[in-house]
Image (cartoon, rainbow, N blue to C red; front, side):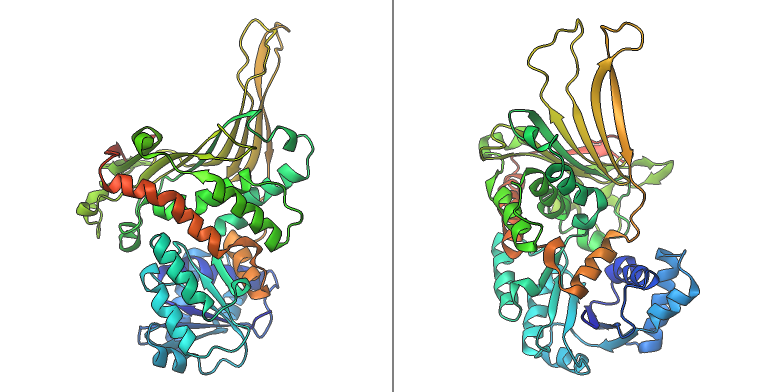
Length: 450
């Protein structure tokens, strides 16, 4: 296990919201080595004690259930160095105390990823070090390719972790078990039996002060290009030979290569974009997106995106995959829905609705809609939902991600070519939207969407 985790951009939101709580959960579970350390690097002028005090405040806000002993154990591991992470000289000085391989986490705006990687390359990191990159990986296909080239100038691909915490969610991982460990599902997991697949991540939260990032990204880049396409790959992939990172990611890559974005002449029919206007969510008033602090209305950034793509291969030909995500919606909905075709012949007097398999992602659950004989008239059908709910994961997804990085297991991270394929899929949609081929709709905050 690598001993030193270096966080570039340690004063940012990602460190306080995700990384520090993840480390604390690992520490509480006894999964951190006593020698584990975190070195924070950023431009703020502060010392170790000030960094630790800020970390304590962040943990109190993000993980209030942690005991004092765990909080002290985690904060005692922290050190801080001031540096411009894009300046090779300053970064070299900040990392001078590293005695062995480190995992370097880029908790930075993606606009400076390449500059930070070049500075890391020039700083002579200890051999065997690893790089962790947050999404979005690049700002487009060309930029993602350039970033991959820059990274591979210093790190081997197996030492690069393009993290997506969605891949560590319990139900997401259960897709693998459901498909490949149960004979009842895999034989019907194809276009002959499946009519459509919906992958939905609807959020009731609004911007939450993230305009600095979100207004330059939007829903399609923030969620669809990475998270939702990764979920699609797991649903659509062929059975892997093993669950090794190479076999699993090879099969995901096959599925991603087969995705076809909507043709230009059908872009308006198969995609939609919108942004929220003023409304209320859960009884709380929400201002219009364009009135949120830090938003530039001229950017025309969407807060809702829905896209229908096809997977152009033998298994899935003709099956629409609908990807949907939005903010400030009235009801959070986070699920994958596999909609099966109706039976070829129906002997019952009333038409039976088709079966549906729902994989709920938050909270974790699986349900299957089936048709059974009614309790009254035995020749009438009743819809029954078979539910299986899972206890909460012992570790949150981000803790699994961090643990995989420390142990050098890239199975739950995205390979470089996967990241590029995600941009290949969404770039034609972004171009059509920029050209005005798909009008911007609106929806009141707290509604069901456009």
